[in-house]
Each structure stands twice: as C-alpha cells, then as structure tokens.
Amino acid sequence: MYLSDNKVNYIIHHLKHHLEAEDFPQDAIEVLKRPDDLPDDSKNRIVFILSEEEIPNPVFLNFRGHKIPVLFSNAIPDEKIFHIDDRGNVIFHHDLLSSAFYLLSGLQETETTEKDRFGRFPYDLSIQKKLNCVHLPLVNYYFEMIIDGVEAHARLQDKEIRRKRLFDNFGLFLSHDVDRVAFYHPFHVLYKIKQIMGLAPVNYSKIKAAGLFFRGVFYNLNPFRGQDPWWNFDWMMNLEKRLGIRSTFFFLRQEDRFDNSLYKYHYKKIKALITKISKEGFEAGLHGTMRSATDAKNLLQQKSEFSRVTGIEPVGIRQHYLRFSHPLTFKNQQAAGLKYDTSLAFAEHDGYRNGYCWPFRPFDFENDKMMQIWEIPLVMMEVSVLNYRKAGFSGLQEAVAHYITEAEKFGGIFSLLWHNCRLSDIEIPGVTEFYEHLLKEIMQHNPEPVRGIDVYRKIEADRYEFN
Ligand SMILES: [Zn+2]
Image 1 (cartoon, rainbow, N blue to C red):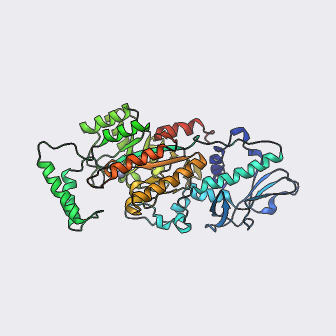
Image 2: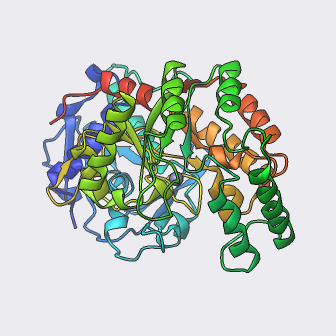
Image 3: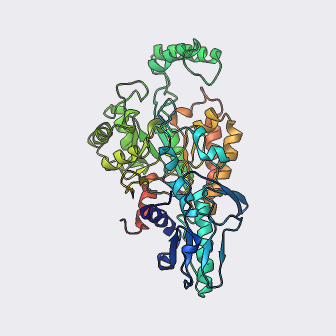
C-alpha cells in the first residue's frame, strides 16, 4: 500500500530537523509510485519511489560500518542507495520513506491485537526481533542515507548543506520511576511468603527470600530502625549532583489494584519529596497507573491530583510497566495536556522500539495525521537487561557503551531508566557501587545531561511550523 501524502509529510517533517532549514531542498523533492512516472524532461530532482508492498520485504545495505536492513526495498533491486542520472536527478533505489514510516509511527503495533499479560506489544512479534536490529536506530540511518543523497544533489549545484545535531555530542536523559518507596512495607514483607511458596516470581533463591522476610519482620518490630533501603532519594540526588546530572523522577499513585504503588501524592513524605526534587533542579513527572494507559478520565484525574497536591504542573509522563496502547495512550496523554511521553521501549529488550534516538511526534492512524505531543524514546530500562535478558552487570555495561556510540553518531539521546527500588544492595548485592561507577563512566563520554522537560524545550525551540 502506498504511503498517503500525510504520511510522506510526517517523515519529511522529522527529516527536516536534521538539516539547516534553508538547506532543505523542499522544491526539488519528487515522490513517485513508479520509476517511469518521472517526466522525461525532469532535471535536478530528488526522487523517491514508493513501495506498493503491505509488509516489509527487507534488503540489507552496507552503510557506515553496519548491515542496515531497509524494510521496503523493491523499487530498484540492488545494493546501492541512490544514483545520479545524466540529467542530474538523484534517484533513491529503495523506499526509505516507507521504511522510516513503518518504524517511527509504530505501524507494526497496530497490525496485531496480540498483547503480553500487561497489555503491551511483545518484542517477540516485532520486526526488530525478526531482523535482529533492535540495537540500531534504523530511522536515523535512513535519514543519513537520504541526507547523503541531498548532499550529492547540492554539490551538483555547487552548494553545500549543513547537517544539524540535537546535541553537540549526545544527550543523557536519566530517569527514575518511583514505583515502590518502602522495602520493609508490610505488604512487601508478606509478599516474600508468596515468593517462598512459589506463588510469585522471585529473582533470587527462596532461602534468600526467607532471610529477607525475617529481616523485614524484625525491622518492623524494631523501634530504633534506620532508613528504609528504598527511601534512597537523597543518595540518588547527591550522586547526580556530584556528577553534574539532573534527572527526572516519575511518581505513581496508589489505585484500587496492588499493581500500582502503595503511596498517594498527598502523603506528607511524598509531597515533601516531590517539592524537594523540583526545588533542587530535578524534574517531577507523572508515572501513569496501569489503568491510565487506556483510560483517559483516569489519566486526567491523576494529573489534576498531582498539580493540586504539589503545585507542580507535570509536563511529562511515563506509563507504569511501559503499558501502552498505540496510539490511544498518546491521544489520552495529549488530551490531558501533557507535553511529552517517554514510555516507548520494549520491556523485554533494550534498544529502539521506533528505530530513532531523537524525540519524535506520534502518528494518529485514525485521522491520518501527525500528533502534537512528543515521544522521547526510552533506550534502556535496567530491568530489561538484568531480569528479562539476564545479561548481568557486565552485559548492561557493554550495552550502555554501544548505545552511547549510536547516540554520539547522530547527536541523539541515550535514555536510561533506573528504578530507586532497584538500588538496594540488600536485594541486589553490589548494585549501588555498580550504578555509581556506570554513571561516572557515562559522564566520561561528555554527554549533555538533560531532563525530559529540557529535551522537550530544545526540540520545540527548533521546531518547524506544526501543521
Ligand atoms: Zn513503574
């Protein structure tokens, strides 16, 4: 099926951010359905030929040191990216526009109704898994291929183009979902019994679970007990301040079911924490409850409650469990007045769910148009690597180094989610030391540390007229 004009324009809109505005050759662009649709007298055009295919039919091209799968490839079947004919037309061989659209818009997620037990699009069904390419921001590679063609076109006219980066080096967007704040909360202590009995999943031995259960009982009985290991916000903020990082914390309220948090925004301790976080230059955002992913009214309620209680208007959101229904969740977030979401990664695997390491606008398939809200793609959640992939600390470190290389290549973002409740040495021995070391290592690559709100402001300041 050929891309509609709106879909083509959606991709062009994003492509434009990668070039200085005056250098984008809008008038030279020709989008055709067949190679012979190009009139015989055309000169100096930039020609894209759309694919008719409904499903990806990839070809692998060698580009910038990688084998890059181009999803829609049947225009001119060879391994070149473009050629220049004798009338100075730059003709792209493969359908880079449809390939970019397929990934960026999340089209693949609308093609199935199958979800995992948390209502999420499963990594197992993705084209990234099939082609083993989740670790590459393919859309950024496609845009580079196109810009190479645009550059060749400019050179024929003795002109130069200036490429643009979002960050000089790359952006580090560190964030924390505040799911659980009390390791020794009776609910969590009693939950250990379920784990010991094999009725709930556990990431360590049952003997250790039993040890933690008794530890929890004693903690609750001890009138001189110390700080709870999950109330570690001062430690987290101090570490980041020392390293020059400012992160975003997303807060989840308690709701009718146990799969959200066990706190409410108006609890004295929570309210004080949120105030402190934002006073010290960190960002406080919404962590949408399980229900809010598909319930617009529920989301709106959460947002107004958060602003009423804390006096802070949240700008960004991440959905709890990365629970997301594409594009309904975006619509609800936009309707609630939120400016950015940062939920889009696969839960089961780190990498690029939409193939892009820059912020992007979602696509509304029902109305065939671009939406206003921004997505700041999440690249890595620590649980995906440690629990789902079981890659360990060394695997996580390797993966981080790889994503930094990709982000540096494109002046994009490396976005890392680390839960405060995954920073307790009692449960995960050695984790605080590892985490501290990891952040130091990342900072040695000279990123620009940004909060979600900073990314939003940056991309808005740079934006092209929204239409
Ligand atoms: Zn969560």
